[in-house]
Length: 590
Image (cartoon, rainbow, N blue to C red; front, side):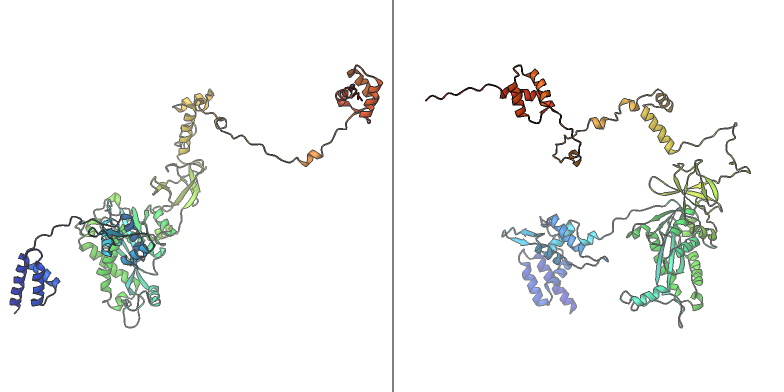
């Protein structure tokens, strides 16, 4: 029966293949009626049974009607309504509806057949978003990763802490202390249970060597703290029986957590001359190796713990002991896919000058609580630190009178080192020799008076001072500059005019403003006016008026009854002359 149906289906497929254009639908309808299959099913089966011509690509395939500016607005609304966890809270349809309602987009096309303006469909807009590479699926993809390399074993280590969500201590009757956290009881909607589990949670610190891929794991209780980080880091650096990896790395990469950036951990790195690199937030791929190491430990080691007896996992020390055995097995037997060696084999290729043996654990714990201290450089380029004197003349850029950051050297009991920075901003460490003195307090190794002479190399400030002097005197050597200064050569060759800014200034002429007289003006002392008696004035006026007569005298007394002002004699003469001038006589004729 099945074979007959297939034969009938094949016959319909052959008829459908050979049917002229416009009649294939008739064959499909007949097959639907006889075979009882859906149209889509028949199309799919026909294409599987017979060859079909390749459909010609539409001339407008790949074109989009939505302008790029409108596509960006749609994408902006979708991204704005997206949660931080990547879950979308707004659909494309809703975003389009909101933007159209606000008049921010048109999202329309012209129907070539009718000339009508019709709105673009949601699918067309979604295709346009992808064409413009502005779809949220495209925008949320991680940025392309860049392959990073390290130079040798112990060049770069990565550290990461993670809470073991599957297991936690302490034990209760009926289990071995490591219980699987049931997802139904421990999830975000039951915070009380999560807090209870976190209180006694088992945390793991994973340390990886970037070159060899060596994986070190250390378990702690109490969370991600600076004390736990330091203890795990020290445990990874010290030499352990059966483990290849040990020593002090040159650079260490961590996440920007509070414990990772704590002063105590920075102190330890300073003392060991380890460059600390804190990755940017939200960039887990920067230390993807240690993230993968966390996954390896969880899947390869922690899955074994649940099946062990209680007396094997009832303490933290026993769990770390089991982890030590697992590390020896894993790093010594499992082949790494990158270098196709065991991790032990790859790490053991380290050279002698690349392996810095770690100090004793007690010493490293002590320097972790010893913060760097700022010290002022003395006139002899020395600093005082922890009751001893150290020579800092070898530190690049050192300058007397300036401050220098000094920290302990973990590799020497009384050692010290200066912390500097490169042009790129990275920290550098400079070992400082101690200044030793004899019984007279003299510096051992200093030049002897009358026998030898020695001076410090020029400080950067001294080098700059000499260059500035040569520039000021227009000289090419220090000797020429000194000679020019002695001859009182003009500053900068006479090209510098200290009054140029005053002479070249374009000053606005201030407009006069009205004001009020000061009260002191009305209080100024007045000089009394001197009056001449009539006799004194007459003597002076007779010299001014050649026709002086008694009538002039009478007229003067009439004009100046109190006397004539001494400074108005000339004016009085003019007034008298005018007053005594004869007036014409007017005769009336009857």
